[in-house]
Amino acid sequence: MKNTTRSWAEPYKMKMVELLKMTTNAQRKKALKDAGYNTFLLKSEDVYIDLLTDSGTAAMSDRQWAGMMMGDEAYAGSRNYYHLEEVVKNVYGYKYLIPTHQGRGAENILSQIMIKKGDIIPGNMYFTTTRLHQELAGGKFEDIIIDEAHDPENEFPFKGNVDLNKLEKIIKKNGAKKIPYVSIATSVNMAGGQPISMQNLKELRKFTNKHHIKIIHDMTRVAENAYFIQQKENGYSNISVKNIVKEICSYTDGATMSAKKDALVNIGGFLTLNDWKLFEEARNLVVVYEGLHTYGGLAGRDMEAMAIGIGESVDDDHIRARVGQVIYLGEKMMAHHIPIVKPIGGHGIFVDAKKFLPHLSQDQYPAQALAAEIYLDSGVRTMERGIVSAGRKSNGENYNPKLELVRFTIPRRVYTQAHMDVIAESACRVFDKRSKITGLKMIYEPKYLRFFQARFEKLK
Ligand SMILES: *Cc1c(COP(=O)(O)O)cnc(C)c1O
Figure 1: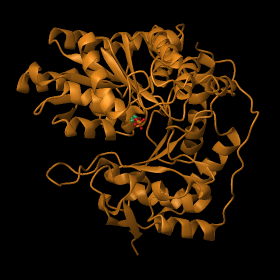
Figure 2 (figure 1 turned 120 degrees about the vertical axis):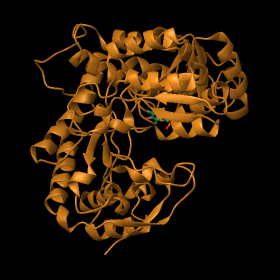
Figure 3 (figure 1 turned 180 degrees about the vertical axis):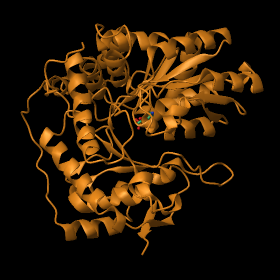
């Protein structure tokens, strides 16, 4: 619960460490060139502090590791599946569970069972894999997030909120029948980890009920969103994150989960639905893409670690330290006047590359260039969230996103406060020499989700 008397110090201690390789500037220069200036193509071995993503990078607890030893590796009906099912019911309140290998496995099945050709799926900002699965199923994503979310300077505390007027316009234009569901993310990743408020969710529920439209929840970072509600929304300061999480889920009809984020595991995800008929269809389709419906592409041990991780993820002390560490890093950068997305979100710091490198145009890939520069300076690996990530429309044109960001994503329970200091120092050093940083040219572009594999050359 809200606690302002102590700092955010970690509610755990270490009993095993992983040694890291320290690199020289010359080694990093070569590694970067070999990787085509794309941090996704660097070898992990050449990275000192890895902030590429918070996905699958968490440190599991001793209890989770003990759970791994309790894996029931039966092909069908593993007891770990039943444990996970019970936890999903108890913690989130959803009725029916289908495990998947990770979040996009759930997105694929959901999109196939719910979206028909020509459908529209409104959502509070796109996510890369989510939108692609909607499109592959014949649907079209429409952004209904509030305008504030596209403005990195705007300090509104709930920039993940939905603009109901935007949704109403889409319904008026196309009819509610064309909208299989509204896609709602908690802690909106692409907006900088920005939360949606409980009030907004309640209003959205009322509005969609009126039009008989379902809400599907991208609950990848629901615990972090709940923490912000506890800290910032009226009436929630004395309610536990656990109870807030359950209330959030209660306003939605089902969810896709990438358990590699909030749920503190290295692999795993699920689809969960309250409607039996939809669940039946999903349960049938999962055997095509993932595996039998009681393992969905996961080993029994993975489901056990996930079940235990979900419980740990909604603990007040855990989430306070998790978000506290992110805020600690962000405040250090802000003190040096580095332009970052405000307010600071739940899973990382998003640096505004357009403001950081105002001398570069967006087609010189400022965020990609900045991520490369930070790696070169310190071996800290970040990633681009801008024009490269946004990709192309079906007509081949670039989506030119307003936000051109470099994401410093903090893995859960992995790095220390001293690591945060090193990261901030590096960002400050690069900021001080920003006018000398040149842009990039894309020399290889893959067809899907190009940011993962694109290659670049440095402009002179
Ligand atoms: C990571 C993520 C996904 C996709 O999940 P994977 O486990 O990477 O397949 C979907 N939505 C959001 C918001 C995510 O952050």
